[in-house]
Length: 291
Image (tube, rainbow, N blue to C red; front, side):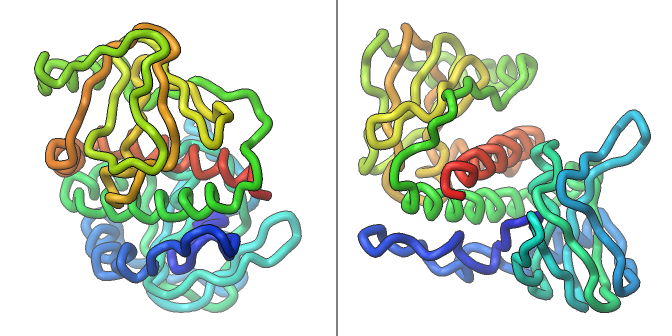
């Protein structure tokens, strides 16, 4: 990754916080390799090559696209703000945060030795996801694991003004509403509690109309408007809710259970890509509150 390595949890949790589940249960190198091989080709990279640099941003106008990489052999070092972040393990991926969230690189990756890698740009990533949708579930699981670890480390909550999030564009939102039907729609009046931290999560929600506030330990950290989602973390890793959700206005929501969620990820690459991008941004924003 740019500055996140799927091979280990995000820092040591505080003594009072529960330790995250072992990463080996989530990241499976064989799934990653099959995914990358389905749309990319192996290439050899010379020692000293810079894969990407901190704060670098691809420009579609200049026909330059962000790429993510799978390391097959060799050693790749990661650094940020002049400090080493360690090395990428063989069989693991790096650089995917910027590629899936369309954000600047948060770290620099350099080949310490001659390496063999498979690289995917955003178009190849979408093509691979159509063939290997299980990879999206694995990535969501690992990102959520990191996010839960970061939340456990927060002594408070980020002071930045809570922004309104949107995951799905109007076209995909309309498609979801049509495909799921009226029976999936639920309504909440202003001020009503939708979910509570610590509860078992049986549903995720997509906002059709209105606005929902997401809070952690009493402080609002995110606002979710039309096209936004919340509650998906508990569906992926089947852990208790990590936040509270309250209707800030009268709301119309689509309620999606785990089976429907899994089918959507497997059948519609756009759904999975949108969720991955949103989760990557959430990890970045939460990381800013930890560091």
